[in-house]
Image 1 (cartoon, one colour):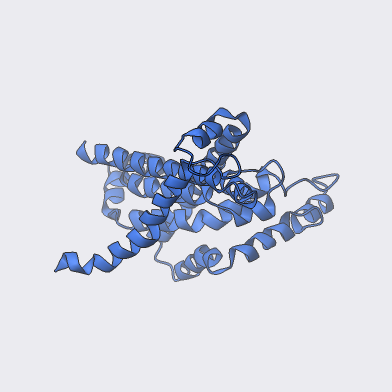
Image 2 (cartoon, rainbow, N blue to C red):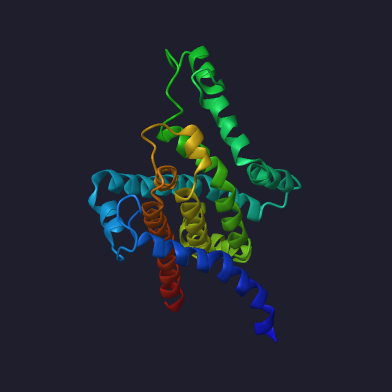
Length: 275
């Protein structure tokens, strides 16, 4: 009976997840009809092109670097907020929680345009910097990696905070109290008690934010420039050029990158659990 309850979900995943990726995998193993005659054999030429061309390899590395940067920022900024949410008993906790999740209830297009207003040459940030004498002229805060990183961190920070807060909330406060009684300072309690016990939350948050970052499209399209090319934008360009087969190969690389991170996370925490 329990297995029957899973049937609708399994059918849904098979139809809308496994099957489309299977079709994409097959498409990636053929050259575009514009490049080869119909009926040509399967080939790894699309993958060889992705890894053999310096341009495409640079785009892949830029995608990974952006994911690492946004994930690191979200972790550093989100951990203190998550700890506060998990430990505070103040009635203002609900206000802070609302502020944390507020970016998720606003359209990503509206959020991106909001950052365009803030970071533009005549935007709020540059106006304040020039007015306060901190900058002689407007700074290039948009259409580059800085603007993209800031916007994506704002968008994805709630995922990191909520993931961490749920794990930290499950750590008994008595452990911290015991460590304090034994003479451990705040930093020692954090390093030896809180951080080790919250590593599963860190791993889950890092994995989630990284995967969402490398798959981001709208924010990078609106706030990025000619140099901020990442795999999702490159896939869009290839589809626009009717090079669907190469776009499918790039999509498979994006999928493999996400699955590799999921495997690494599961492997690390399985080893930690066994230890």
